[in-house]
Image 1: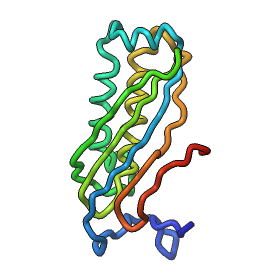
Image 2: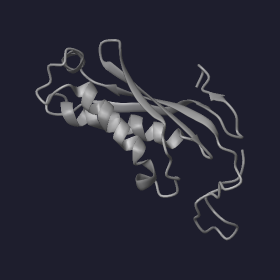
Image 3: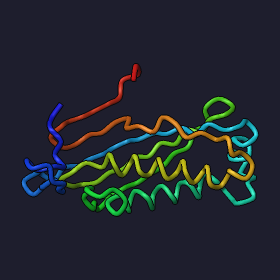
Amino acid sequence: MGQLTHFDDSGASRMVDVSDKEVSRRRAVARGVILMSPATLIMIVDRTASKGDVREVARLAGIMAAKKTSELIPLCHPLPLTSVTLDFQSEGDNALRIEACCIVDGKTGVEMEALTAVSVACLTVYDMCKGVDRGMRITEIRLEEKSGGRSGHFVRSCAE
């Protein structure tokens, strides 16, 4: 494992200098799961929540969050994202899996943007459904895959 690049030799925080890096297509996929009661999941899938279509509001929130990642996480570079997508999949009778994919042609990766998109999408689902299910639990937010750049291709193994 390499040294932490967000600190200089004296321990001061810094934004990593990416000036000498090559521009490349960079892609990151992150995933999160929100656990809930079966009735809440049915309400989301059937689009019957009183506040509106939960998945579509969460999708927009995730896209907006990805675009604002550098404003939320202090040392992230602002990136000109070329694509942000969020997909939703029911898992069993009590879980909703949310997956975000971010793409940029740039000098630094988009892992934080994908993770931010998933996190905010999960929080939005919670916010929209908390009136009927305060016991929801956000879990398993993690990077699943990244490609591009010097560090190469990463895919989470099934065992992780």
